[in-house]
Image (tube, rainbow, N blue to C red; front, side, top):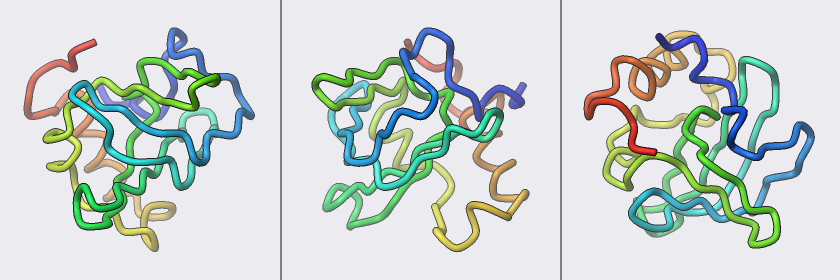
Length: 122
């Protein structure tokens, strides 16, 4: 089911209204970049991560459900996907991520029940 893909897990340590821009994002196998933009909207929460040189300066969009924990002191966010899994996600287009329901469903399917690598490792 993909309906909860856009919500933070209750165990993530996320506090509504917290400013996450600039936090480093860590995949299960290393850093992937920094938060460029994020949303806390209920049922529509996500992170946009600037990957820098890691994937040639691209940005990726991660649904809030991928967040395992947040360390405010270290300014780090830990997600439950590998770098490869994030790199293989549907391509992020800054101009269409907000209003494009097809893109959102594609991401929800990729990170939700239709995830090609089986259930996420936590």
